[in-house]
Image: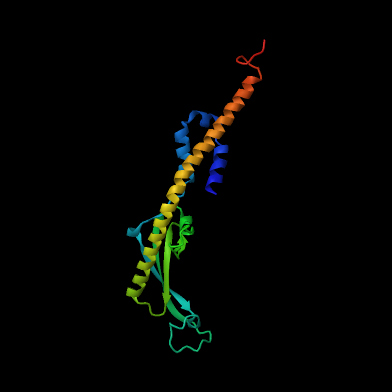
Length: 190
């Protein structure tokens, strides 16, 4: 998908820009624009929040030991812990080619990934352990994706160079065609 979007962008570059920009610089700019940026977590800005929620104990019998399972709803608490990040949110949804890396569970809300815990009698130490385990899984996922996508981003730069070179070669052939027609002062026929 990134490669195709980059090809479209290269095809739409103005001819004068393409001819005047150093090829290395143009390839670096294009690859940078279409590279996948691994999210960087901002752990110093983690924000916990709580809200009251309705919980159906029949869906999870661990909340109430003596529940009849007949549609009663009890008030519970939901803890949401937002971890801000900078980078491409889509990386959280990607799966590494190695099946040893778990895919993180969480909701993306703007530029934060959110951990959630619900219950009728949440224990702070247990929620913190769950959050810490979750955050460690997120970090392992990002480390695995960084290894995999680092190579992708480097390959993308080479592809940008190839695409730009092909476009410049085509423009040169177009110029040669026009000159070869023999019109104008440089290609005039006597």
